[in-house]
Length: 183
Image 1 (cartoon, rainbow, N blue to C red):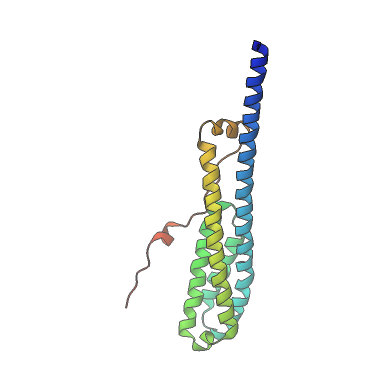
Image 2 (cartoon, helix red, strand yellow):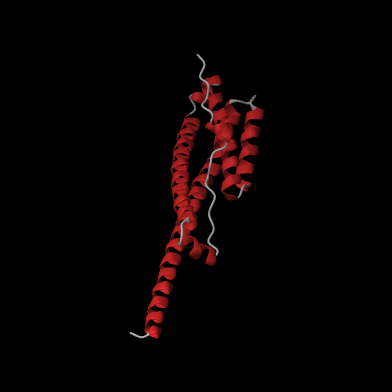
Protein backbone atom coordinates (compact mmCIF):
# COMPACT_ATOMS: atom_id res chain seq x y z
CA UNK A 1 0.00 0.00 0.00
CA UNK A 2 1.46 3.32 -1.00
CA UNK A 3 1.73 6.40 1.16
CA UNK A 4 -0.80 8.15 -1.06
CA UNK A 5 -3.36 5.37 -0.62
CA UNK A 6 -2.83 5.38 3.14
CA UNK A 7 -3.22 9.17 3.18
CA UNK A 8 -6.48 8.93 1.21
CA UNK A 9 -7.83 6.28 3.58
CA UNK A 10 -6.96 8.42 6.61
CA UNK A 11 -8.54 11.47 4.96
CA UNK A 12 -11.68 9.47 4.15
CA UNK A 13 -11.94 8.24 7.76
CA UNK A 14 -11.54 11.80 9.08
CA UNK A 15 -14.13 13.16 6.64
CA UNK A 16 -16.58 10.37 7.55
CA UNK A 17 -15.99 11.05 11.25
CA UNK A 18 -16.67 14.78 10.80
CA UNK A 19 -19.85 14.01 8.83
CA UNK A 20 -21.01 11.54 11.48
CA UNK A 21 -20.34 13.96 14.36
CA UNK A 22 -21.87 16.92 12.50
CA UNK A 23 -25.06 14.96 11.76
CA UNK A 24 -25.31 13.94 15.42
CA UNK A 25 -24.92 17.56 16.53
CA UNK A 26 -27.56 18.72 14.05
CA UNK A 27 -29.95 16.00 15.26
CA UNK A 28 -29.48 17.10 18.89
CA UNK A 29 -29.87 20.78 18.01
CA UNK A 30 -33.08 20.04 16.09
CA UNK A 31 -34.38 17.98 19.00
CA UNK A 32 -33.81 21.02 21.24
CA UNK A 33 -35.69 23.23 18.77
CA UNK A 34 -38.57 20.77 18.64
CA UNK A 35 -38.69 20.60 22.44
CA UNK A 36 -38.75 24.42 22.60
CA UNK A 37 -41.60 24.49 20.07
CA UNK A 38 -43.52 22.06 22.29
CA UNK A 39 -43.04 24.41 25.25
CA UNK A 40 -44.30 27.29 23.09
CA UNK A 41 -47.39 25.28 22.16
CA UNK A 42 -48.24 24.59 25.79
CA UNK A 43 -47.56 28.20 26.79
CA UNK A 44 -49.84 29.41 23.98
CA UNK A 45 -52.56 27.12 25.30
CA UNK A 46 -52.14 28.65 28.76
CA UNK A 47 -52.15 32.20 27.34
CA UNK A 48 -55.40 31.41 25.52
CA UNK A 49 -57.08 30.06 28.68
CA UNK A 50 -56.17 33.02 30.88
CA UNK A 51 -58.58 35.61 29.36
CA UNK A 52 -61.51 33.20 29.87
CA UNK A 53 -60.44 32.58 33.45
CA UNK A 54 -60.13 36.31 34.11
CA UNK A 55 -63.60 37.01 32.71
CA UNK A 56 -65.05 34.33 34.97
CA UNK A 57 -63.25 35.71 38.02
CA UNK A 58 -64.13 39.30 37.12
CA UNK A 59 -67.82 38.48 37.28
CA UNK A 60 -67.61 36.75 40.65
CA UNK A 61 -64.92 38.83 42.38
CA UNK A 62 -65.50 42.39 41.27
CA UNK A 63 -63.31 43.86 44.03
CA UNK A 64 -60.13 42.06 42.99
CA UNK A 65 -59.01 44.46 40.28
CA UNK A 66 -55.32 44.46 41.36
CA UNK A 67 -55.09 40.67 41.22
CA UNK A 68 -56.68 40.57 37.77
CA UNK A 69 -54.41 43.33 36.48
CA UNK A 70 -51.34 41.52 37.83
CA UNK A 71 -52.29 38.39 35.87
CA UNK A 72 -52.90 40.40 32.69
CA UNK A 73 -49.56 42.18 33.08
CA UNK A 74 -47.68 38.94 33.79
CA UNK A 75 -49.34 37.28 30.78
CA UNK A 76 -48.32 40.13 28.48
CA UNK A 77 -44.72 40.06 29.73
CA UNK A 78 -44.58 36.27 29.33
CA UNK A 79 -45.96 36.41 25.80
CA UNK A 80 -43.34 39.01 24.82
CA UNK A 81 -40.38 37.20 26.43
CA UNK A 82 -37.84 35.51 24.17
CA UNK A 83 -35.11 33.01 24.90
CA UNK A 84 -35.00 30.40 27.63
CA UNK A 85 -33.71 32.69 30.40
CA UNK A 86 -36.20 35.55 29.85
CA UNK A 87 -39.04 33.14 29.18
CA UNK A 88 -38.27 31.26 32.41
CA UNK A 89 -38.40 34.40 34.54
CA UNK A 90 -41.59 35.66 32.87
CA UNK A 91 -43.32 32.29 33.11
CA UNK A 92 -42.48 31.99 36.80
CA UNK A 93 -44.03 35.42 37.41
CA UNK A 94 -47.15 34.39 35.49
CA UNK A 95 -47.43 31.16 37.48
CA UNK A 96 -47.27 33.18 40.70
CA UNK A 97 -49.97 35.55 39.49
CA UNK A 98 -52.21 32.62 38.53
CA UNK A 99 -51.77 31.11 42.00
CA UNK A 100 -53.24 34.34 43.40
CA UNK A 101 -56.29 33.96 41.14
CA UNK A 102 -56.90 30.43 42.38
CA UNK A 103 -56.47 31.60 45.97
CA UNK A 104 -59.37 34.01 45.38
CA UNK A 105 -61.73 31.05 45.05
CA UNK A 106 -61.35 30.46 48.80
CA UNK A 107 -62.71 33.94 49.53
CA UNK A 108 -65.58 33.79 47.05
CA UNK A 109 -67.88 30.76 47.48
CA UNK A 110 -69.81 31.66 44.32
CA UNK A 111 -66.53 31.46 42.38
CA UNK A 112 -65.67 28.12 43.96
CA UNK A 113 -69.02 26.76 42.80
CA UNK A 114 -68.79 28.21 39.27
CA UNK A 115 -68.56 25.32 36.77
CA UNK A 116 -66.79 27.47 34.19
CA UNK A 117 -64.16 28.52 36.74
CA UNK A 118 -63.65 24.93 37.88
CA UNK A 119 -63.26 23.71 34.29
CA UNK A 120 -60.79 26.47 33.46
CA UNK A 121 -58.90 25.70 36.67
CA UNK A 122 -58.71 22.02 35.65
CA UNK A 123 -57.53 22.92 32.15
CA UNK A 124 -54.89 25.30 33.48
CA UNK A 125 -53.71 22.71 35.98
CA UNK A 126 -53.44 20.14 33.18
CA UNK A 127 -51.57 22.67 31.05
CA UNK A 128 -49.18 23.47 33.92
CA UNK A 129 -48.40 19.76 34.23
CA UNK A 130 -47.72 19.57 30.50
CA UNK A 131 -45.53 22.66 30.66
CA UNK A 132 -43.46 21.10 33.43
CA UNK A 133 -43.06 17.90 31.40
CA UNK A 134 -42.05 19.78 28.27
CA UNK A 135 -39.60 21.94 30.22
CA UNK A 136 -38.02 18.79 31.60
CA UNK A 137 -37.81 17.26 28.11
CA UNK A 138 -36.33 20.47 26.72
CA UNK A 139 -33.73 20.62 29.50
CA UNK A 140 -32.83 16.97 28.86
CA UNK A 141 -32.31 17.75 25.17
CA UNK A 142 -30.25 20.84 25.96
CA UNK A 143 -28.13 18.93 28.47
CA UNK A 144 -27.39 16.27 25.84
CA UNK A 145 -26.45 18.88 23.24
CA UNK A 146 -24.36 20.92 25.68
CA UNK A 147 -22.50 17.83 26.84
CA UNK A 148 -21.44 16.76 23.35
CA UNK A 149 -20.60 20.34 22.37
CA UNK A 150 -18.17 20.44 25.30
CA UNK A 151 -16.65 16.97 24.87
CA UNK A 152 -13.44 16.39 22.98
CA UNK A 153 -13.16 15.78 20.01
CA UNK A 154 -16.81 16.59 19.26
CA UNK A 155 -16.19 20.16 20.41
CA UNK A 156 -13.76 20.63 17.50
CA UNK A 157 -16.49 19.78 14.98
CA UNK A 158 -19.06 21.88 16.88
CA UNK A 159 -16.73 24.89 16.85
CA UNK A 160 -15.89 24.35 13.19
CA UNK A 161 -19.60 24.56 12.27
CA UNK A 162 -20.63 27.16 14.84
CA UNK A 163 -22.84 24.86 16.90
CA UNK A 164 -23.17 26.45 20.34
CA UNK A 165 -24.56 25.45 23.70
CA UNK A 166 -28.20 26.23 24.46
CA UNK A 167 -29.62 27.75 27.66
CA UNK A 168 -31.61 25.61 30.08
CA UNK A 169 -35.16 26.61 30.95
CA UNK A 170 -34.73 27.28 34.67
CA UNK A 171 -36.84 28.49 37.53
CA UNK A 172 -35.88 31.63 39.39
CA UNK A 173 -34.48 31.68 42.92
CA UNK A 174 -37.83 32.62 44.48
CA UNK A 175 -39.37 29.40 43.13
CA UNK A 176 -36.58 27.32 44.73
CA UNK A 177 -37.53 28.38 48.25
CA UNK A 178 -39.90 25.96 49.97
CA UNK A 179 -43.19 27.63 50.90
CA UNK A 180 -43.89 28.21 54.59
CA UNK A 181 -46.96 26.43 55.84
CA UNK A 182 -48.79 27.96 58.79
CA UNK A 183 -51.69 26.43 60.67
